[in-house]
Image (cartoon, rainbow, N blue to C red; front, top):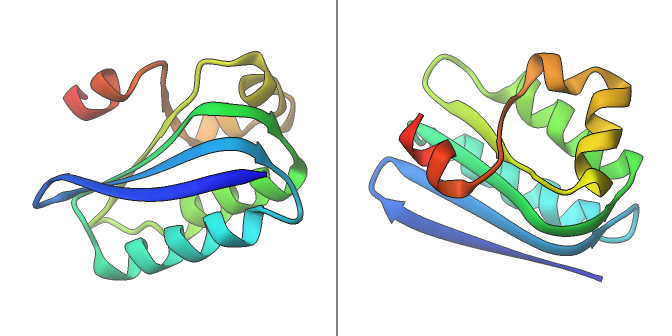
Amino acid sequence: MATVAVERPADDIAVVQVDGEVDMVTAPALESQVVALLAEKPKVLIIDLTGVRFFSSAGLAVLALAHREADETTQLRVVANDPAVLRPLELTGLTEDLFIRPSRKSAMDA
């Protein structure tokens, strides 16, 4: 099971913190939060996956959707450092499209 929480460390930054497993059952909750936040058009949207230990194709689809939906007003940044998340991103080529950092601090400082 995954938990999805939204944080706002600054006025123009939104963070979606995900913990647990992202699969076809839990990905809709992640997608819902990401889509809602993109509609608000924050300057930076960070999807923090450092607490994720399983990341399925459903999770990849959410990231691909976020990449497509983010426009010039929102910078999308993904935080991932576990092979369970990084490997699927690499295999699908999403590492080429997404701005990925190993820590939330490095994503916020970028």
